[in-house]
Length: 155
Image 1: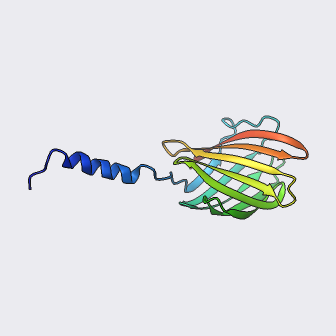
Image 2: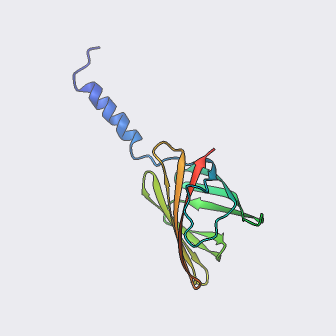
Image 3: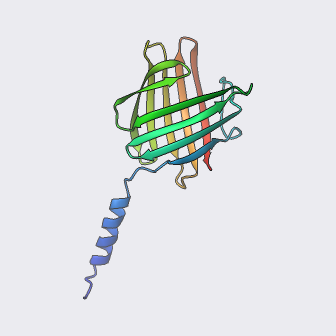
C-alpha cells in the first residue's frame, strides 16, 4: 500500500489530538515537602501523607496530618471534578465543596461551611513530569484570612 504524503502527519495529528486535552492523572501517594512549602501565618504541620485515587472526573483522597505536637488527624473526600456540590468536613467544620477543572493540570475547589462563616479556596496543580503537586490555599473565616502553599512529592 502506497502512503500519500499527507497520511502520516494526519495520523500523528489525530493521535496527538486524542492525547492532548486529557487531564493529568494524580493517582498515587503524596508526601508533604515541608521545606518547599510556605506557611505564612499558618502553623506548620509536622507531616502530611495524602493518598489519591483519580479517574477523571472522579476524585477520592484520604490522608493524615500530624501536628507539631504529634496529634494525628485523618481526612478524606469522595466526589468529582464536575462543578457539583459534595459533602466535606474540614477543620473549619462541616460543609460542601465544589470542584471544577481550570486546565489539564489544574483544578480548583471551593469549600463553604454549612453555617456560611468560612470559605476555603484551593487551587491544585500537578507538574508536567507528574512528580510534584502544588496546593495554593486561601482560607477566610471570622478569625481572619490566611493563605499558604503546600508542595507534595509523589512517592
